[in-house]
Image (tube, rainbow, N blue to C red; front, side):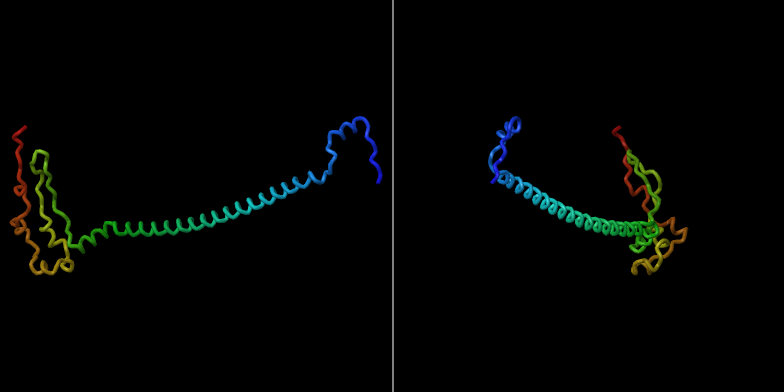
Length: 168
């Protein structure tokens, strides 16, 4: 085996600072550390990619659910609009036997009555078609003649007790 040449000067001083052992022994832990870091990084990327994919699928499902619920809400709103249309309300009220109310009367704070109320019963026979009236009233109800309408009893202001304010 050939001998190493002797170092002189600056090279000799630097050689004394370095350990005299084998250089391969110090390299093994470093290589293992690098391999572990690379493997751990790859595993972390795999887990992160799986989590993002799962989130993407959940987001897609939630978006489709939102679309379905929005469509259902719009259909229900169309139904509500159809039921609350004025002509539909009138038709359903007549089917239930309801009639338009008479002229209202108002009570003032001091207890007097303003206005002359009219009964809805006077208009009920003319307002409700015979086909929609209850069977027991069809035979007994006749359309009043204007001279008879004045003589029929109605909710007059005398039906409401008028209180005079004597305390003030």
